[in-house]
Amino acid sequence: MMDRRVFSTTVVAGLAASLISTRGMAATSAVAKARNVVLVHGLFADGSCWSEVIARLQAAGLNATSVQNPLTTLPEAVDSAERVLARQDGPTVLVGHSFSGMIVTEAGLHPNVSALVYVAARAPDAGEDYTALAKTFPTPPASAGIVFDGDEGRLSEAAFLRDFAGDLPEAKAKVLYAVQEPFHKALLAGKTTQAAWRSKPSFYAVSTEDRTINPDLERFMAKRMGAKTIEVKASHLALISHPLEITNLILEAAGQLA
Image 1 (cartoon, rainbow, N blue to C red):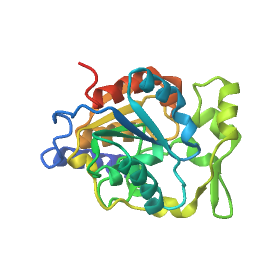
Image 2 (cartoon, helix red, strand yellow; image 1 turned 120 degrees about the vertical axis):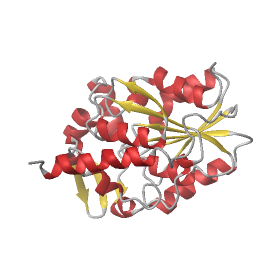
Image 3 (cartoon, rainbow, N blue to C red; image 1 turned 60 degrees about the horizontal axis):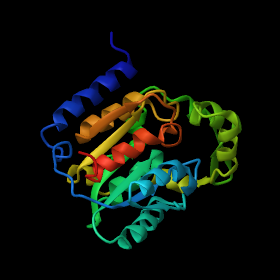
């Protein structure tokens, strides 16, 4: 007899297959050449987490801006990204890590956005309950390390070092832990109202050693959206431990690589 978890995963897999004919042409759409990149961070981080990638994008001649996500509510987080997108001159690649895939999915319909890049990120459909979707896959270890002080949540140091930044040198991971920005509980209740990946070229970097988002869930979301997908042998922080691979994926989304 099939147990509940296997049944749920099977249902999700079937859903992925049924969506192939109705998803956007994200995998095959030609990308516009872009020189602007807007990057958005997720939970347990701040805008500085993109520093390794930003340096490489700038060296390639691109204009890169990291959004300081307020981590308060989803609408406020989306607004923070849209304000930065509005300042861009011309086609812009919108990049999200982790939770900020929600923001990319919602804000990605902004007219300046030419392509979307998800880095080990959430990629919900319009109106989808991401938490319910995630529960159809095994729970990642980092979830047990979230602690709350009233309405503010953060990762414990042990979980941060082991499950969030597991492939980084401990000294570097501790610096990142020190600048961790707490998130508000209300943020987790938000649902996207639209799915930009249905109409914009999309790219996805799966972290195969991820202990914060289940790698198979990442693969499911990438396949569902028809994204050009790479797999990186990395923790949840591939943008820091493997910045070259992530930068190259962004450059491809920007039409800067042959």
